[in-house]
Image (cartoon, one colour):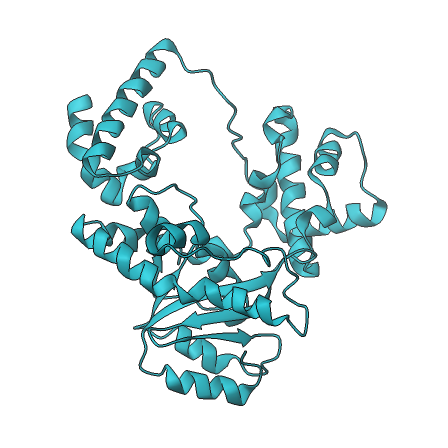
Length: 345
């Protein structure tokens, strides 16, 4: 394992000309808002190394390599790895090949694990013994380091096999477009105006309380960020809803802090949120949805796709009710649906 700046420099020198990097991370996120990045594992065609992020003083040389314009990240279920690295580097990858998404394009289950995919593609059964390890532990047991390295050792071959099939089925560009969505910086920044969407049970509250709940959720998010604590440690959803309903009252100190927060964020006072509540489909809507599902099933078979990758029931109902922002009206999805949607009108 790489534990010194000098070892890191030596490793980076050996992969200087490598642009295809299999990447995984190990982090801890139990008592903090932001993930604590502990390890970064990198594999190339010639080998794999594990970097102890907690031991390295200067991470800039590593980041300079990872975020080179020509570097392609090969990652399985990339979002959390991108996020853990972003909070330290403040950078996002340029090119991304997510093997979980690639597998879904080839009709594997949507959330297929790295272990299962590796077993299917390569016949290799990987150990899961250290799934719940506290990765801040030092020294790390040697088997745990090997476990972490296994998470990248087989990635490049998985990539190669998936990539060949994607090219054969002419889906490579579709995958890269999905990967590009994961490099949207808004995915990794705290969003105060959308914090209310994390409240479980909000739609069950009276409409008159929604705005207060949204303001409290924004304040909770802000406090969680400032204190680097899980948002539920600042205020549980149950407490938040009770405050919104007036069943419980904030302490004087908390009330003053909340008032100051709203003063500093006047847009949260003025914004009106729209909480989506479940509307029972009409007979006509049910028929329209059924017709669209049959259409999508037909297209899915034609392109060897899981139909849920094209559109789910929720997005179909939104479309039927006039929402033009649904995902299947853009990009590769619209390309394969356009003609059928025109005929369906």
